[in-house]
Amino acid sequence: MKINYHQLSIRQLHELLKTKILTPDQLTKLVYKRLEQFKKLNAVVTSLEQNAIKQTKLITEQEINDNLLAAIPFVIKDNIATINFLTTGSSKILANFIPNYDSTVNMLLTNNKAINIAKTALDELGMGGDGLYAATGHVLNPWNLKHITGGSSSGSAALVAAGIVPFALGTDTGDSIRKPAAYCGIVGFKPTYGLISRNGVFPYAPSLDTVGIFTNHVEDIAIVLDSIALFDEQDFTSVQSKEKNYTKNLNQNIEGKNIAILNYNDYQWNDIVKSSFDEAIKHLTDGGAKVQQIEFNKELLQSLLPVYMIISFAEATSCHANLTGINFGVRKNGKNYQEIMTNSRTFGFGDMVKRRYIIGAYALSENHQEELFNKAKKVRRLIVEHLNTIFKKYDAFIIMSNINPAPKIKDVLEQKKVIKSEHDYLEDLLLLSNLNGGPSINIPLTTVNGLSIGFNINGAPFNDQVILNIASFLSKKINFNNKLLGDDHE
Ligand code: GLN
Image (cartoon, rainbow, N blue to C red; front, side):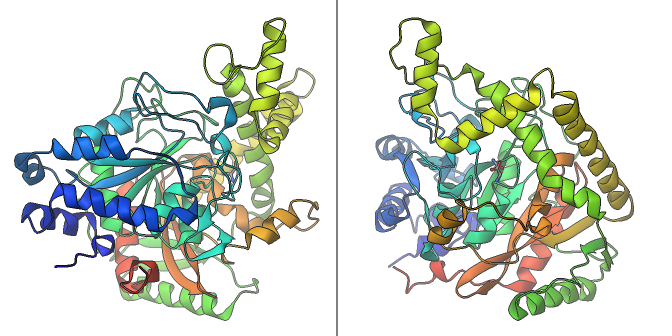
């Protein structure tokens, strides 16, 4: 019997494994076969094939029966440490870095007998939103290879979209899960800040960084979340949420929920997007939710990107000061330690990362800290307070993840050469949940010219379940068809 494993959810795969219609060995082999077919996506930094085959063989029948994740394949962003396996952050400066410690998330998944298939490419150290800044080159969008995946968790998104693995881990500091999820037509979830341990995850901007999950099905997010959303004393920002059992508590009852939707009335957009958006709102009201359009304070909206940039660049500059080439990573020669550091860092970082360090160092410097870094933190507070007033009244706040589909790689590269005078502030809204630490999920809504458009649902911190429930309800109604998971796309 031919099994199209790539069309299946975690639960469906689990049933096949349990009933022995599919053995763990067969599944792991199918995954590597499909990964080979999609090699052109350039999504992988390091394949873990030998280890994956070895680990698969060790899985017992009992473990399959007991655990939904046993033998389920996954991939993990290459800024998340995997003990004894190369973890590069897609940066030249860490091209030879093999951690002697494991990230908590990898450890938890491995303890659950899930099979880690590969380390995936990212925009260098998590910085970038296009999928064009990995040391291993551009990651291509599986829906159309000429287009970007979005970033920075580009490789993880591409491999889930292509049905190679049912789930992947990424990180989200400023939309890095939800943007690529929107561009690749999959579900992408950023949890409440602190809910998933960041122990062993390379920091980018610690006051914003989160680990999150990509899947093709909302229930799969809940399943993975249940296995990794645990308090971790190794991470001092780890929190114990009152919520647990996300899978068991997942339901589609949105009756009586108060949902705010951003008022896009003045916005000129594609007819397909507009009608899909209206249809999604109708589903919500038909399901018994009370939906209201709201405005977002314009001044705060315009400050989102600068605030994010100052805070994240400054934190990155400070965190990445340990990447000197001296204690670990790639070292270049020099006459003294300053010269070794300068040479290693000059060689090891890409241009975009270097630019960010310059801005970050400037924002932190004695003469500018007050007017830049401290001011950005104050405005962040105002943004969070504004969101608090919204979440006092509403259970969820819905926006578009993207209004336009993933642009062509060529156009993105050309545009980078010119400084745009017009910035569309509505493109920055995914940053909101990084600033307040709330849960946020992208679910696919529709396609335009064969590329996906996503819907984004946000909640107050620790209201992850309600966000998952609304996403589950909507995704059932929308019934998005990921053509890449079809039979014909072999
Ligand atoms: N586009 C954002 C940036 O370049 C997102 C990064 C992220 O979330 N890791 O900083």
